[in-house]
Image (cartoon, rainbow, N blue to C red; front, side, top):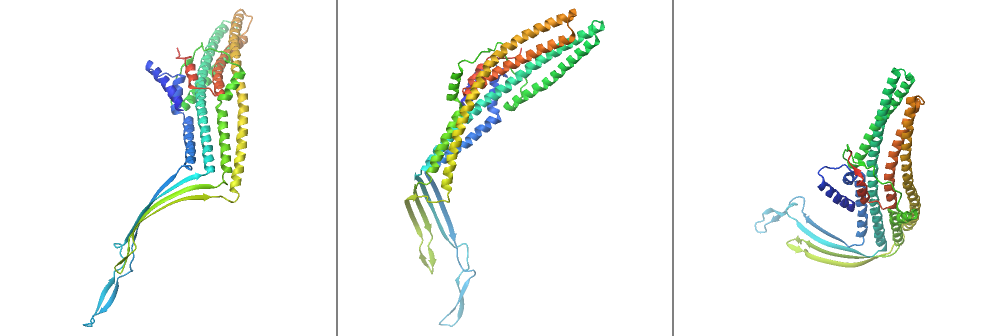
Length: 465
């Protein structure tokens, strides 16, 4: 995560220094997404939260130290004053004398003390393997976070080029609408002088109405594509740089076997599955160690001060006392209601599940890399064919319009030829953007998609006009 932001930050800093205008290109929008995308922020927060599990697991191997203290005040006395009658042996007079005052909070005994406790695990294989399992899970989580970063690149690129796709389709629809309007006006003029029938006007009107309706729908679709991009970056975008017409359309560099080998070595999905399997195996070893003895070192130091008890003017007890202890504690679990065996079996099933998950991930990777590789090469052929279809459709329309002028073709054939031409234009635009996204998908499946790919792709973007 940090490396992605750092790399993009360096590139953006240099580009912003050279141009005072904030460019709405793919690179700058990706930077906005890195800063504002809630999906990535959620993934990063989840990763940090899960990372605490490793720290908590490691704490069982480290010493624990605790400090405690206490203070108390003890008061005692009768509920009321105690008096005693005393007779003077000389005079024989009797007097009442206060022997003991009633209970008072003012007079009491203060006791206080503090202590220091130390515990250190000496031998506990279950805790050790538990920590190893948590560390493997943390590595899997880090790989998953990297996959989320790659996914963000794909989501931004998809949203960005969906906007460009919608813009180009809208421009094509507007051109078709304008052509339909010109055709309608010409047909009306020809009908007024009696060169064509009124049915030709109706056909032209229907074609224009359909083109106008498509334009309205495409305008709404374009706005929704802009809003999809805004949902990722958190900022509105009204205009973005377009893809250059000179963008190279080339086949995949390298053979399919080379890409399969590269995907197996770099796939984040496989790396995550392997770390998860390693974590499950370490957790199993921890559960197998639950029945083993554990040895702990325990030490303590206590300092207590007690106040003396005064009875009939005589002080009893009291004073300051220190006490220390150091012990080795051995614990051997014998029986816990079958819980230890049950946790071991549970861990064994988790290992099996992780093994099968890894195997499934490998098979899916093979399928996905082959499909992605084949799709990019197919896109190259499709784009070439779309270019040829545009030329063919343009020639067909020119010939049909010429035939309509000399009376060998009718208006329906002209409308159909124009419809074929603009459909070919839309299909060509779709094919180009499919190619761009499919090349990124191929790299994502192979696990090699990086911001550098965005930087290189961004060089083929240019401001409109």
